[in-house]
Length: 383
Image (cartoon, helix red, strand yellow):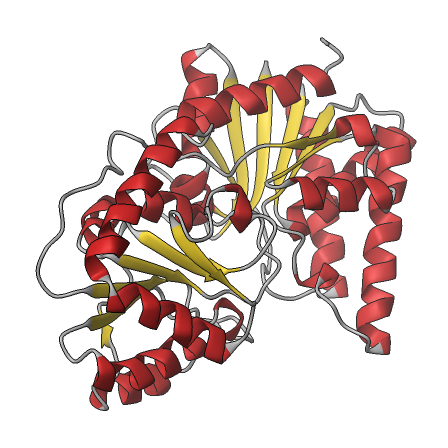
């Protein structure tokens, strides 16, 4: 089988989806990855993959550039003739499915299509502005068109998103499949006994929607009550994102003594960082799929304090392995973190239970690869 992956950014693919590609290669399949952000450095990092650069702006819809992207994908599919196209995230899902519509209209052979929605994206975030509603209507119409022409299998990371896509006509109900995340390396993300001063960790892209400002304000308030506690922020400064947090704002919080900022932590160093923490904070206000960070954190024995979202409730047991708080509620986040720090011994015991739960759930790389192979069989009509 020849599989073409389409994604926003090659670094994203290599960080989050490469285990699936390796699984397919090991089974004798041919794997192509069409992505934005291809550089000389990352294009040769993973042996066996054919990397195809895409002209793609992952943050903004631009009519001219997006039309060129559809043409590029149409030409790529016509030239490579894959058996399966698997797209990830909003723009590849939208424009990849549209390219297949044009291929079918042109009488070309059309591969099976699997679209993965790690979350529903900003387009389906609540919003009442006319422009927002118009964009959402147009995007939904394109997805419905793709469903009529291609009947894709869509995968989401929680049942709510699967129902949403089926209800809005983007996928047939029986072809909306839940896959729990991108999969983690369960051999690398393991717990370690913790003692010493408490550490609270926030690790995410530094954009406003991820809730870093909520975390900083909570750290400032709790620092005086728990002077021995450390509040650590890790993550990249997403300079090209309109929702970015300026570096100056992070530096100012460090200068005030509210937080420590350790920068962008590489994949190889993430297990060690998580094992150094007692509490992991996920304060996102975005409509998340199933944040990989909380699975990794829980697997490393962190007590998880997280926004109360449907996806998060799949892996965090409120009061048992973590604490859920009302999304975007500053006071509720501060209270939840304060309670965790007030009984740090109990918090650490609950973190151990969270690690046990991760070993029970289908969140490993092998589990997720098997789930995607099942989705491929469904898309190809094998089941």
